[in-house]
Amino acid sequence: MIEVQHLTKRYGPFTAVDDVSFRAETGEILGFLGPNGAGKTTTMRVLTGYMPATEGSATVAGHDVFADPIAAKRSTGYLPETPPLYPDMTVREYLTFVGKLKLPASVGKAERTSRVDAVMAKTHIADMANRHCSKLSKGYRQRVGLAQALIHDPEVLILDEPTAGLDPKQIIETRALIRSLAGSHTVVLSTHILPEVSQTCQRVVIINKGRVVAVDTPDNLTRQLKGSATLYVQVDAAGADAAPVLSGLDGVRRVVELDRHEQMVGFEVAADADRDVRRDVARLVVDRGWGLLEMRPLRLSLEDIFLQLTTDESGNNAPPPESEQPHA
Ligand SMILES: Nc1ncnc2c1ncn2[C@@H]1O[C@H](COP(=O)(O)OP(=O)(O)OP(=O)(O)O)[C@@H](O)[C@H]1O
Ligand SMILES: [Mg+2]
Image (tube, rainbow, N blue to C red; front, side, top):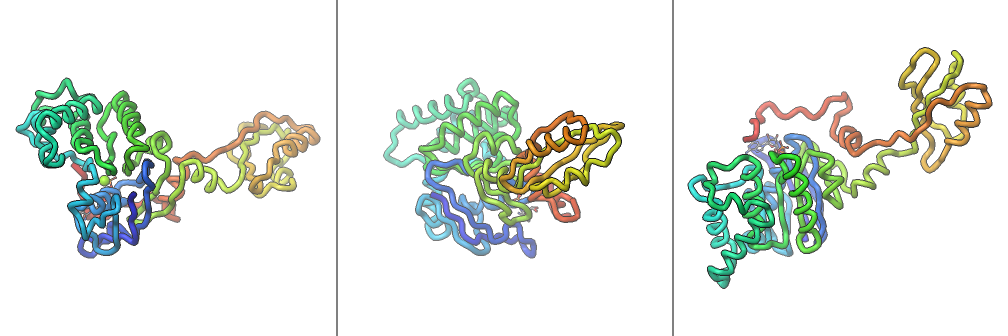
């Protein structure tokens, strides 16, 4: 449904999106995850035909975004980072106006009105129908932005940080709404909020400094990058040095001391992939006459993986270029 190949976007000498390729299958929700300045908004603007690419190709619902932008736009609903509201219009006037632009000419006034009512109900803004757009709170502006993206019931939805600025209750409602759109719509949503990805998306593209660093399901990312089973093991070794003893166990790759309180020492014990060394560790500790105080799996969360993938070797997170202006 969406196919992006070798997309590059330069702003003058600065490369904001660098050879990005990915695809989204029909009906799936694809998360576009990356830190500030990674290139999420730039990619979405190119995908929605708001900005030309420097190189590469993109098709949406079978339409080439660059060769056939009108057909591509007709198949796409776009929630930009800053929703494009007209301050002097009421919410209903604005959505009616967008409906006139986006709904086919064959759609009459009555049907248009019922579309407007339907998207207002879906995005929970019916009580704001007669409020001027300029008087809306940030969260409501965001929801009106989502409503305008949905008005023509497009096959593809491109949502740039759809939950930014919403309160926790609205976030839950909006995520549920997005999930309910899956199947009948293909959704790409950008975020830098990790729970959003695991709760809403079937697949994730992680982007950093304009480059794709990983594409997979949230579960697979967690599993793959974990590499091997890692345990937290806390022992009371009565003053003995337990690390080399644990390291000597068959199947144990690495032992790192994590914490120490008097005689109690906590270790990270990494085992070979697919090896379960828990029984051997327990037996060893007991055979030595030590106390086994705690043993539990240490799992990398999606958050750890995200940091691993988007942090450079010196341990710094990608710094934004100096030219970067704060977003509105
Ligand atoms: N019009 C522009 N002119 C020059 N540079 C730009 C322009 N728009 C974006 N950039 C730069 O391109 C890079 C990618 O920006 P983009 O807005 O796509 O990032 P993002 O992933 O959406 O970040 P955020 O999470 O902050 O929204 C940034 O370094 C930004 O400063
Ligand atoms: Mg952005």
